[in-house]
Length: 258
Image (cartoon, rainbow, N blue to C red; front, side, top):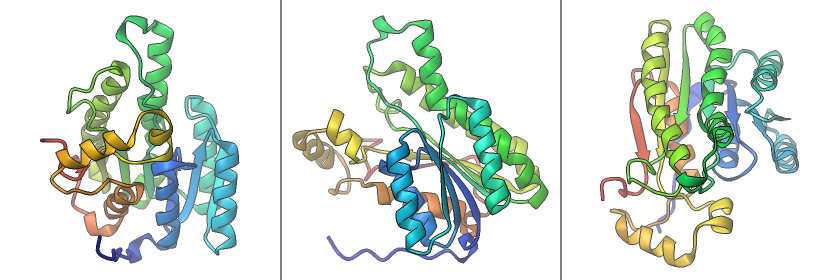
């Protein structure tokens, strides 16, 4: 693989950014890359040890990063954390709704309680985070909201129907909120990761054989890594995408339509 040269986005310097699920995996890559752009990053996660360590590392390196341990399914607590970030960094001008849990499940075993819990962790928090940051963005006359989708429902993936339902709904949330917030200069888009190699996937679902099979199905024969997703998030957050809204951006190495 040739050497990779990443872009720098001047509009992200000193920009207040809120990221959910930022302690590990794709979320940690998002936190690192936004911090590297000079953004003022606030992130939440239930993984307190990982989040604290990441924030300490980046702060020691001279970046402006704050971490708050938070369960995003607790809406009042999450909105309170966002308010705390606003007091520290100013009102968020970028919101990255990354947090999710793709736990596999059999449709026969789904209870009403499990349904509600999975919708809460994969969809509900995104709406209420938007509700929390939108007033500040409206006052500023600009902002970027990035909701995370998934190619799982596009590929008709089985064994996780509540997850795929929530992720399909994220696309509808983006398009509806893009219409409502667009008159205020706020962009809302959906970032759709493909089969990304993360610590969680390696621990729970992915094997070397599955990775090799995915690579062969892709148009580009390399694994999709968290940094690849973060690179698209930076573009969608920056002024470079100022007239892009209500769109879907698939980062999957050319797998989704294969």
